[in-house]
Picture 1: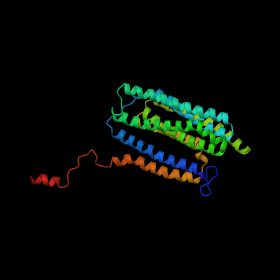
Picture 2: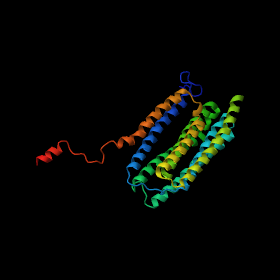
Picture 3: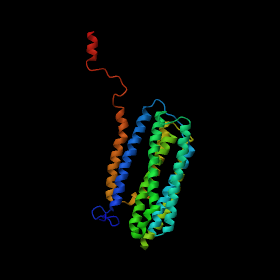
Picture 4: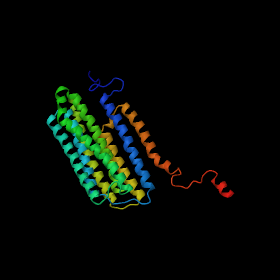
Length: 194
Length: 113
């Protein structure tokens, strides 16, 4: 049985099922991160003192640049598909995947540095919320990489069978990826600068 | 198809411009941090820049500037829920956690002894 409205839009919503689905998923993600941001505010306002300058701002800023660049390459991966330029699409999707990998490698070195200094999640309220927020964000990066890997490998078969559906799937992956970038845009100043 | 590809080519220029703008704003955020403002000013500046960056990503990269009403409807509900979450910290200052609350009738009992 075929899933309906994967390419053509539903007459009642004017959307494909996938698009409405990914936006509802992102709405639930907003609530998940929103709850954690709210927790951060409670912990920070309730703490008698809050550490400042404990995180590596340069590494955080580099990771921000990496994620923003990856958002541009991701949207380009979709735009080149709309232009039916398969080779360029592959190039942009691989670039996004590599940038995501570099982000996680940077994060690994950052975490390692903290653990070497004994700054584990149990060390303080700050490290607890820092590892929770960045850890959850990191898992989202990893999830995005798995999806991208699928569309670089076995998922490509769909391009030959149904190019429009494949283009839509890349658009939904992009929407998720931009959301992950959006979360980091707020995490960076909140954790590293304030 | 022709109009579609022309539209996409036009959008590509916008994506590049927004990408550069986001990088510039990131630089401004880091530079503003060097001024060591007081906490309220620093929070305001950082969050204003983050909100500007966030709205650029959402409106251009996520195409929210020209989406269907069902998406806007879902997002309005999300924003309402998010605002409720953000008011939770205010409610915590209205409760009695961490404050000494005498037991009911405790004072009268104490007087009796």
